[in-house]
Structure formats: C-alpha cells, structure tokens
Length: 314
Image 1 (cartoon, rainbow, N blue to C red):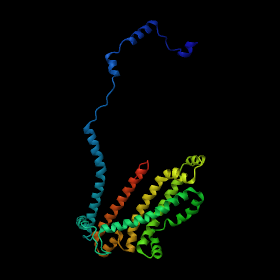
Image 2 (tube, rainbow, N blue to C red; image 1 turned 90 degrees about the vertical axis):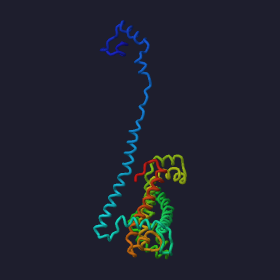
Image 3 (tube, helix red, strand yellow; image 1 turned 120 degrees about the vertical axis):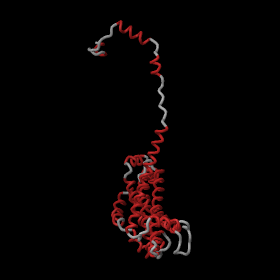
Image 4 (tube, rainbow, N blue to C red; image 1 turned 45 degrees about the horizontal axis):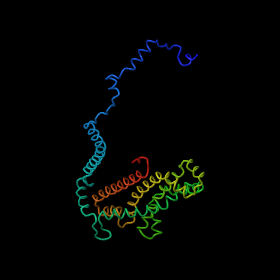
C-alpha cells in the first residue's frame, strides 16, 4: 500500500547492485570537469567599439532629424524668396540683418525706439504678471470646483460659455475698465491663462481615486489636510499640464495684444517694423518669438519632470 502511494506502478524498482554502484559513483571526488562547472562565470568584457557605435548612433538620431528639418525650412525660404523677386528677404540677407540687430539689443532712443531685447523683456513681464494672477485665482478655483459637486455643476456652464471666446475680444473691455494699454494687455493674458488652469486642476481633483478619499474619511481628516496631503500630490501632474498650456497660450496672445495696444513689446516691435516696411526685422521677430516660446516650453517640461514621476511628453 505504501509503495502504491509513493511510486508509480510503471516505475521500476532499482536492483540492489545498481544502488551500490550509484552510491559508489556519488561518493567519488569531483572531477576536473565538475570543478570547472562549479567555477563562477565571469561576464564578458564590454567592447569599446560597440559602445562608441551605439553612442554615435544615438547622437545622430537626436541631432540629424532637427538639422534636416531646419535645412528644409531654409531651402524652402530661399526658394520662395527667389521666386518672388526678392520681395521677401532671403536667409542670407536676414542673417546679416540679425547680426546687426543683436549687436546692440538693449539700445534705447526713446519710448518707441528700443532694441529687441527691451521689447522681449517687456512682453515677458506682461506675461509673468498676467499669468501669475491667473495662477493665484485659477488653481484654487479649480480645486474648489473639482472638490464640490454643486460648485462643479454651477460653474461648468459658465466656463463652457466663456472659454471659447477669443482672448482679444476681452481687450476692449480691459481698455474700457483700466483706461490704459498695459493693464489691458495684462488683463487679456489673465483671461486666456485662467481657463486651462481651472479646467485641468478640477479634472485632476475629480480623478483622485475614491480609495484615497475613503481613507481620509476613516481618519477623520480636516478639509485642509485632505487638500494638502491627498489632493495636491495627486493633482500636481494635471496642474502642471494646465500651467504649460496657459503659458503657451499667453505668449501667443501677448504678441497680438501688443500689436493693438502699442507701447514697448515684441508685438509692437513687429507692427512698427511693418509700418516701416522692414520685412527683415519682421522675420527676425518671428524667430525670436519662436525661440522664446521654445525656451518657456523647455523650462516648464523640466519643472514638470522634477515634480512628477511620469515622463513628460513634449
């Protein structure tokens, strides 16, 4: 009965002399091959040539596509310039003009004749003030709207109604209320920046896992601790996404707003050069606007990467 449990009926029982032979073999000292088998294996040495090839390939994959895109842009630009009889300045003429413009970017010959550096700084200052005010109002408003269902139902129709309105449509209201071009431009930046922050923050609050809120209810946490210990860490990625969208929109809008309000700013500089029929400086301003916007985007991506665990997509 015991053999029926522990042995299969088809398994042969070893003979006595076989058992003795096996015991003798197992008692023999390990051979040279057994010693080699027990010797720890060593990892193969890395090949410097292969590592260098991988680094070189990664470098060219990161650098070559942008260079090809830039070369394509310059080629199309030169082709369009030649086909229009040089009414649009070509890359070479614009480059020479850019060297002259950036040789002294911070000159000042009066309130309406300043270098490109002062104009960029004036625009960035307006964006910073308008965006800062929008963050102070929009992020807490997004938390409250996302936290309480009644307020969400109350404000969602208003946000859906006002958000599609072009920011420039608010510029005359700003001129009427504030009686000045600079506050009106800041007001326009405030309006265009506040919606992404409210919407993304409220969405993040509403997507906090219910298990987190159940734990807070069991622990009888106050509303302040819920906001600071649970909601804020969970909502931070959504909030930073709203900040990125708001800054990009603000930089787009300030150029158009300054064209209409005048004064000092990169938008006013573009419009002033158009009135002087200086197309080279207009093209230079286009590249300056793009480079500044790219720098702002890169800085915000680094900020988002530092405060979140997920990779931020560009």
